[in-house]
Amino acid sequence: MTPFPLKIVTPDGLVYDGPAEELVVRTIAGDMGVLAGHENCVASLGMGRATVIVDGQRRYAACIGGMLSVMEGHVTLVPTTFEWADQIDVARAERSYDRAQAVLKNKTAPDQDIRVAEARLKRALVRKSVAGNK
Image 1 (cartoon, rainbow, N blue to C red):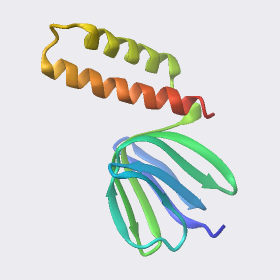
Image 2 (cartoon, rainbow, N blue to C red; image 1 turned 90 degrees about the vertical axis):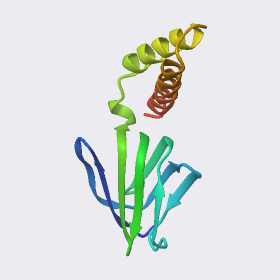
Image 3 (tube, rainbow, N blue to C red; image 1 turned 30 degrees about the vertical axis):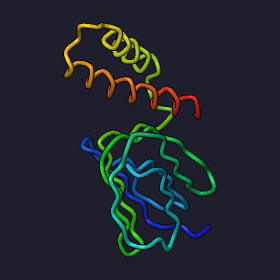
């Protein structure tokens, strides 16, 4: 496959800057794949697994929130959170999942706490799922 320049930058800094043959991310409209020659576009990222193929090797990551930009053949991914599968702390994701479940089971929890717990639960599920793809 023909490579294209990919840059992945989070609020914490540069995660990746180099060639890639394919990128698949979850946008708010569903999964989106990018190959060399993709048309220019900008998309809002959802919450899910990202797949990056470099030198024929497939790597997975948890990718949560942010934006994807494809301009003149250059692809820039600016997620709020991006964690490679082999760097995910599964025990931490389990604890977060358990805390969220406890709030959601509480029938008297305030609406704000419920919304925060639902988001925490979704992030934990994404991380646990992606960590299984090391």
